[in-house]
Length: 230
Image (cartoon, rainbow, N blue to C red; front, side):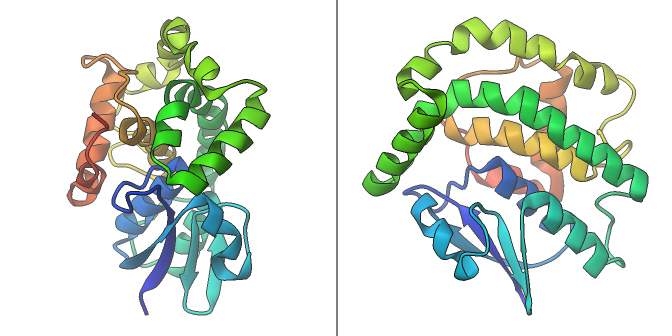
């Protein structure tokens, strides 16, 4: 039975943007598993699988429903051990937990600074009203005022990637010679920015940018199937 994958989209169902959904999309491809995408907008999320989660991604695999990108990856490795591993053992799971926290505390806040108004523009009228209201409550200011700080924060953001940049001098992927779920965590954050906003966060010669290009080419180039924002 094909896995159902609830994927966050805006008014254009062909431009999924969620960093967490991109993690799951890459994990499914890594495992070589077919999935039927269920385009899901913000206001649809409470209805997904009877309200199992306040966020997506969510998958249904037969009778099993799993929410949260990390939980989904753990499930996929457990349910399909004969397929390529996403973690390569308990150490890989622990490493991925660290990478997840680092990404969400270091990369996600700056991507939001870059892309909030662009993300709002990707929504239909009702979902745009929800997005603006919920995000402006979270930040305590207008979306435009958050995005106004992106130029000032760019140098600091690029500097914050130095641990990743330095590590990539030793190996082509965070997972080593080939990608693991840890790679998809960081890829998801940068793909979120790429799909949502034309703002250039990385310089072309940056080893992080080169790693990101390698990730875009993985699994038949599924990351490139969604064009960068223009």
